[in-house]
Length: 426
Image 1 (cartoon, rainbow, N blue to C red):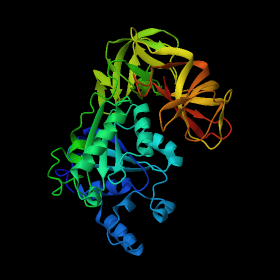
Image 2 (tube, rainbow, N blue to C red; image 1 turned 120 degrees about the vertical axis):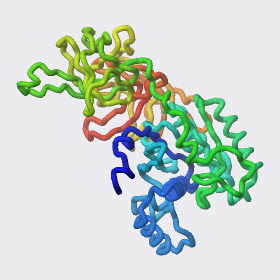
Image 3 (cartoon, helix red, strand yellow; image 1 turned 90 degrees about the vertical axis):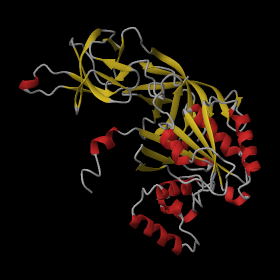
Image 4 (tube, one colour; image 1 turned 90 degrees about the horizontal axis):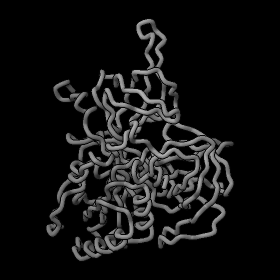
């Protein structure tokens, strides 16, 4: 491939869309992703040959595109997804990262992991079954995670004879449920992942549907306003001191912008010290910038030498986050070992780490009917609950609704170093 054919700079500058898939077992999530990759010509010939051979070995009558994402041996043997499988592909318009998440109830934690950084969630519904419990569960989690865009793909339309009434009924049922959730942008597409209808190419069987194909929507849906570009937040990840004569007084603060816009000359405040200064310069690997915004990774130099280290946060002087040691979190418990009230854990939030105590469980959520369950003293695997947490050091945070980066955290078991929970600050 020549340089004329591939412009690496243009590729790096392409907009990136992260999306996850969710749905019940056998709804066709892995098949849909396989079809998307195959029809958009994003897989190599030897990959296709390998899954063709695997399909024949299994005695299947067609090439099982789901095998592209089902990488674990246990997944291939059972024909299900267990772990989150990530796949990367691009078209001339966008780059994509796909998180193929499992459908079984016991792997709900994996769905939370796969969807936590997504701009968009594809929720699959089997046209024969309609809206089921797992649809409610995954939609609620998508709402809880504040995923800005949802595409409901009504799959297996070929098995209901491409019936428009079946599709319309599912759309109406979903809209009735979604009205109770905090979901802003929902799209509905009738598809057949197996046959490829309305995935990349328009369906000849459903002329009654005049909306976009799935790939067209993925390429064109607006994600520029998904991040918070108002509240400037810069968690410091690393302090750069080259210790060379030519950079004798260089002290740069490196990290990834979590929100807002920073410009050279802006007056800033460092937390937790409260000291103020002005931005002297903003550097990247490609040179200096006059302004930078989320989610760029940059190095900020200040006009004054003030004490800033990893875990501190640089913000605008007149726009600061909450600084608290006690707050409420919607917590998804992700460990086999139960969570107890008064339990102690390591809390990781942006670039800061501190110890914390679970003060109380205010209520647990029944995903099936969205009702609150009071008087709980412990959480089990996949439980979602509102809990009160106290930390040993103040955190600088926004509500998750306001900023998904500064409003999220994880809990880690001190003894095993396992991630046991993911939380969204209320």
